[in-house]
Length: 222
Image (cartoon, rainbow, N blue to C red; front, side, top):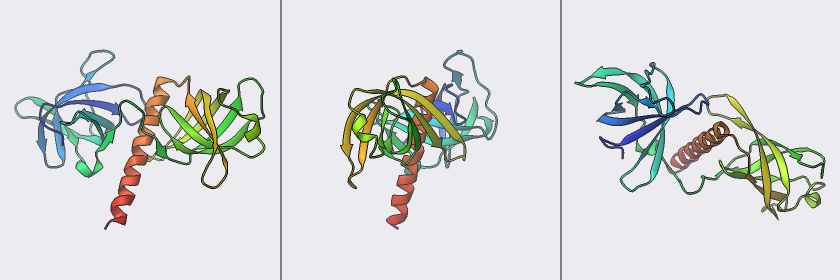
């Protein structure tokens, strides 16, 4: 899927919002050799340590954006100096929708607060989530108090595959109120004041959920 000459962007898996750009110079079994990456913010060359983990993205031949987990395996000179990245294989590469953030099913713990005291705060969980918004279950007592267009404040606890938790705080706007398949009240919200680093974390979280769903589907089909 990835080929020699493709541009690659690396985002650290530790939650940092930094981005590095590089290029695929060689492809071997289980590895991609890239040029020394450049920090897109400073324009300087970055020297990566063995074991550092990243989300790598590249544009495929079909014009789609693809992402995979990787880590630095070492450095070689053949004849140019190159960084060796682990490549997990095509089954672990996920296509990312660029026009609209990918929405995934996920039960993320959430706390909802009013912007102007219209209701008492409550805790709940999401039904699905993306880097642009979410759908959340609503307690019966609160459902009549919520309406489309209302501004709220939202706290989310993202449990990453690494075992880390990232806590996201953002303002949001209620887009619609509806009932889910069980008849419980559900509200869809759009994030309106999401910090760039939190949007990166949500993209990573969605990517990890996609991988988990793909792994489960592969196991079911065996």
